[in-house]
Image (cartoon, rainbow, N blue to C red; front, side, top):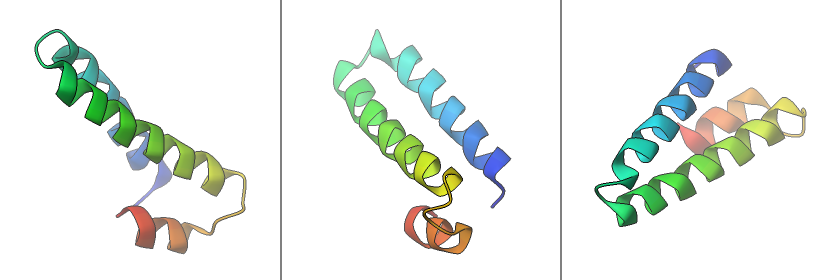
Length: 60
C-alpha cells in the first residue's frame, strides 16, 4: 500500500470522526484514538526508523 493511500485513509477517518462527533461522541473518541495511532506509526515510518514492510505488517 502506498503512503499516499495511507494518508488519504487517515484524512477520511478524521473527516468521518468529525461528522460523527455530533451524533455519537463515543464513536468519535474511538475513531480519534485509531487515527492518532495511525498517524504515530506513519510519522515513525516516515522518519526512517521503521521500514515500509514492517509498517504494512503492523497496520495493514
